Image (cartoon, rainbow, N blue to C red):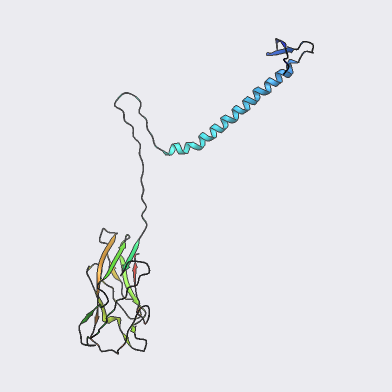
Amino acid sequence: MKNVTFSHQFYWLNRRRYVQFVQPGNDLMTSESVHLSIRNHEEGNVVNKSSLLLKSALALALATPLLASAESNINIGGAPNSATARLDFRVIIPRVLLLQVGTAGANNVDLVEFNLGTIEPGAGGQVPRTNGGVVPVRIVGNAGNIGLNASTTGALSDGAGNSISFAKISAVSSVPALPHPALVDGAAGASTAITPNVNTRVTDLSANWTFQYLNDTVVAAGTYGGVGTNNSRVTYTASMP
């Protein structure tokens, strides 16, 4: 790289200070071009600084709502010191209604069977369930009173024209507050009112239902009802206004 030597001198014009550069053997460099170069460099710095200030102001404006949403206090000075801040809490609970009759599970349908075996038909008395014991029941709700009913598609049938009415089947509950609703052939029985037992809005009750068959009528030999056939299915419905 070749070294170049300049001499210079200063002078004032219209309240501006100018510098002249002279290279030996060459013409005088105009100070106006040097001034313009310096001026353009300075203006570029001003533009860059202005852009930086604008971006900083915009970032601060966007962050202000976040800063304003949090409460803070500061205490500076001699002892003792204290500072306070507050929070609001909210928990939202949805309405819920649960009904379980029999084995827990969405698609579990238990079979309640009465097999008279050696018991004389029509001999009288109650015949208990012969394929198991009690049926567990649970009902949960959190919005006040609950209605519980049972519906059937008809009397139990043997598929050959003979039938046994659901009126011959009864259930006793281990918890009086959760009784078994009435069974009616081919219809929904009257709704049984279940009232809250935890407070004025919440119900959480569990019970065991013990089923019996009233053997007071002689009927034709055969199998009445079954698993999803011959009007065997009873549907229990809980409702909460």
